[in-house]
Image 1 (cartoon, rainbow, N blue to C red):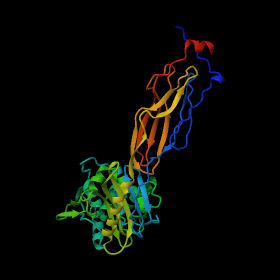
Image 2 (cartoon, one colour):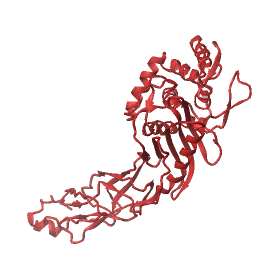
Image 3 (tube, helix red, strand yellow):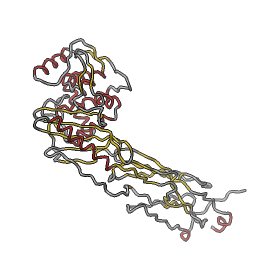
Image 4 (cartoon, rainbow, N blue to C red):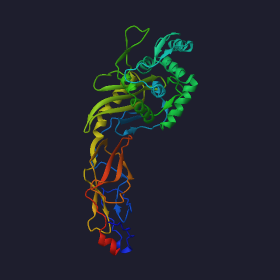
Length: 411
């Protein structure tokens, strides 16, 4: 049978776009002309869970700044207090660990390369002992692997180890500090300034929100998460085991992360805990800075634990797209029957109740011939606050046939 060229539709054959409501959100229309076929498709640029606001009474500590996040859900979800830079003590080691693991990744169970302790490293240990800083014994010529040093850094909070890792990674402490500040900018930690890899100097400052950002970035490394989830460690030249300065690890769902204390900074902590939510188990992180007075570390951990306890109430599981949900229609001037374009499957996400889901639309190339049922017209990508992505295909629910012979003749 001889093929005939499809004529351009006349003005009288123009299509009427179907406008579909998608909540109460802003809409946008787009149309794809292929051989006279138009896809009329209003798709919202963002979605939000249609749920009632949860009743959360945040137990914010008085006089200190704090921030809370839900790992893998939406990152930062709440903060309190003036987010102004303050000394953060050993929470600076969160950035030290991040750079070391970024530059020297550790696989599950791997020990990493052996690192020789230098004369400068041993001198740092001597200085730390003299100034009553947290440390572990280091001897020139001693060989310790990367994992051992990370454990000493994060569990014992050893300042001499922080400087030893800095020299190993960057060649010098100054060079490593430069990397710390550059990485802080990359992570949008705009109120953070590092002057040492240990945080002992009060000139190393940050905010609860910024500290939470680096802690969440750290937890993406399995080697970090498994290290801070240890209640104690064994280390060469130390008799017996050394307890984690984050007390309670392994109890009541606590899985780390890091605490710190100096007289200038007071008690500081980022505490991670596994908790149950309406969407299932979640890991909540709470950062609290500047606890002063007696038993500062005990009290700052208690404050963070209370924040961890209440945060799961804001996590919901919501279906943002249902299976066969309509997303416009295909129309052709030769057909009286438009073809609905629908979602191929449902999309359900665990999110913080008030966080919007950003929607990106990618349009597929339409067939030049018969458009069959289940043909992909477009692809939607839903992006949650923490960068999680879920995709769904938009497909035809039935075929759209070509123009008839008679239609071609008369057009």
